[in-house]
Length: 291
Ligand SMILES: Nc1ncnc2c1ncn2[C@@H]1O[C@H](COP(=O)(O)OP(=O)(O)OP(=O)(O)O)[C@@H](O)[C@H]1O
Ligand SMILES: [Mg+2]
Image (cartoon, rainbow, N blue to C red; front, side, top):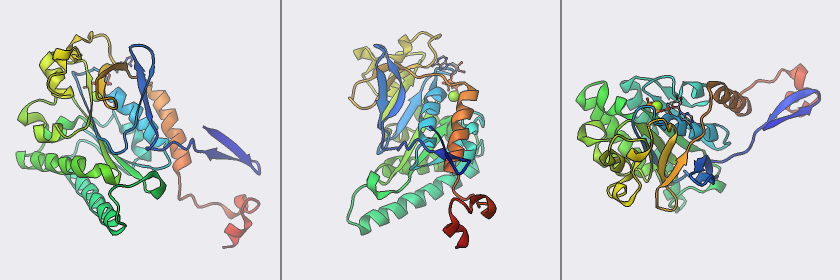
């Protein structure tokens, strides 16, 4: 990250990350860095309150905003967990189920259009070289939308739309990262939605059953049990991703100020519609001004 000076003016230099690059999510119990490639994948994080779900989501968002090929769509039942990214997101939905449903329908249209494009080109998935943006839909407090506010019918509509995007979006570059306190039972997150997230992250859970609900049945009995994580170990969790076996890891904690600095920088590098003052830029790009 940094700037170059052109004719006495500071010009931001983007760090050129891509959603096709591995994302740094923290360190494992042996101190090794944990990287995960999220493109073509969806990730669900679950765990008790304060276990570090939003911390993990923040790490992903910070990578995403610094990418040159990402569009962010944010759903935050709490306003404040993802609120800092509002200025660099295409859409930010707060605790508003009706707005969340409309936004998911728009995403569904994006998915449909992209598949029409892929079909027309005889292809099955997008590639980095296509130059298409990866849309990253981040849902914090998933249960707020799927089980807490609105009517039963609206909650079901939200879950059905999200399920469709999780199921169909991957190959065309629309991926979902979601967090919820306990993804249990039919009433909180429908199993049909929970089970199609390929990657899982379990922060501390209260029971081995809850841990299995997040990671998948059977992992606790094999020793990968998020209820064994001590309550004071915020940010520690099991990540089930590449490799196919859960990895015990800790996500780095970022202060509000650090997130603000990343977002501020990202906003600076992302601005695309600045109308230059001709007097200011005439020495840099005379032809542009003449046009
Ligand atoms: N890696 C970390 N190192 C140190 N402290 C951490 C770390 N991760 C989280 N914490 C602490 O834990 C608190 C809760 O973390 P976080 O907000 O990510 O939890 P959560 O699982 O999203 O909780 P909730 O379900 O209430 O939204 C943070 O405010 C922070 O104080
Ligand atoms: Mg949270």
